[in-house]
Amino acid sequence: MDDNKPKAVTKMQIAEDKASEIEFNSLEVHVAISRQRHDEINSRFDRVEAHMEKLEAKMEKGFTKIEKIIMWTAGTMFFTMLTILLTTVFGAKVF
Image 1: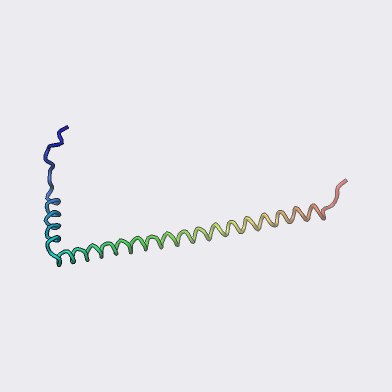
Image 2: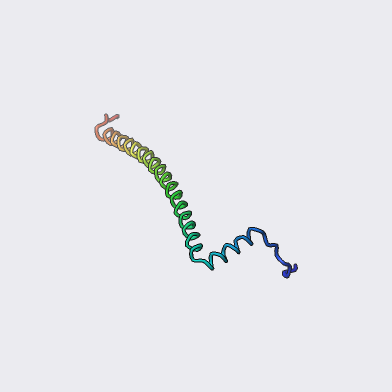
């Protein structure tokens, strides 16, 4: 394969190169673009944070259900074991 082939350059790449050059040469442009980037990053973090809060709320609701199931199971097992113990100790002896 020929690695010496010229690569196609898109209009978008040319525009990005020109924008980078302008930003590099002008402090005001750099500051304005940096501010836009900063705002976009904050916006993304806010969306991620909102999504995480939704997931946490769903998890809390799920844990509440699991806790109820565990408590019902433990209570049932306790009363079953208590019934077996009382039946064994005080039950009628059959001969």
